[in-house]
Each structure stands twice: as structure tokens, then as C-alpha cells.
Amino acid sequence: MSDRDLFREFEHTGDIGIEVEAPDRTGLFARAALALGRLMVAPDGIAPNETRTVETRAGNDDDLMHDMLSAALNVFLADGFIWCETRAEEIPSGVAVTLRGERFDPQRHQFLTEIKAVTYH
Image 1 (cartoon, rainbow, N blue to C red):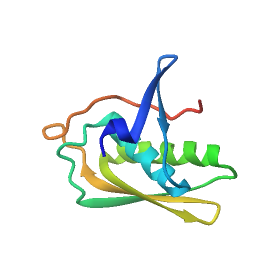
Image 2: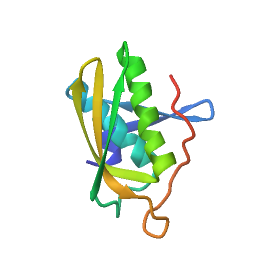
Image 3: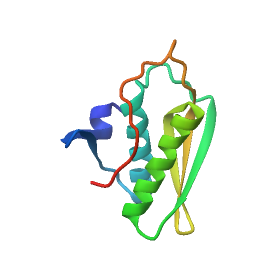
Image 4: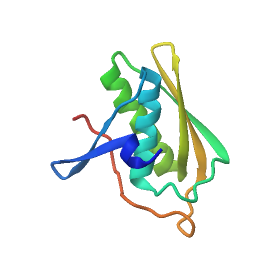
């Protein structure tokens, strides 16, 4: 799936905004996490050798999306882990998103955009 099919980017007051569509709720969370990774690092050369799972719980879908994307961003910022595949599943009061990828290697991976935080739009 190309980035163009995965998400649409729009300008937002000095930030990056994205629109994501999916056929179902879990697909939406998986695609949003994948889009976040693709905004930061070009997908070419990322091998799905390892997994990380982000479990997030919230009272509503807006908070759940924000918190899940923030947790995924933290996986990149704190652990240096970048992903090329995602899968999401429902858990009680939330969602678990599995990220498949590897440690970011600046010699092999093309860094695209620094994202410092996830915000509400």
C-alpha cells in the first residue's frame, strides 16, 4: 500500500495533519500507526524482524487514537524502534497495536520528519 493510499497529509498551523480511512475500527488504528511511522522514516529497507505491542485504554475513540499514537511515537523516540507493518485488535476499553519492524539505523533508513508529539486536531 502506498502512502497516498494509506493517508492524506494536510497543513495544520506549523504541524503535520493526516487523514486516515479504513474499512473497520481496528483497521483505522493500525493504519494510523503505520502512517505515523511512514511520516518519520521511509519504509524502504525496514525489515519486520521484531515486534512491539502498544496497549492503550481510554474512555472514547478520540482519546484512544491520541494515546495510541503517542505511545507508538514513544516506541520510536525512547527505543529507536521503527515499524513497517501494523496490526490492531480490540482489548477491554481499548486497543492493542502490534508494530513490526526493527531498530532505526541511520546508515540504512532514511529519516524524513521529526515528530515531537501527537496533538488533537
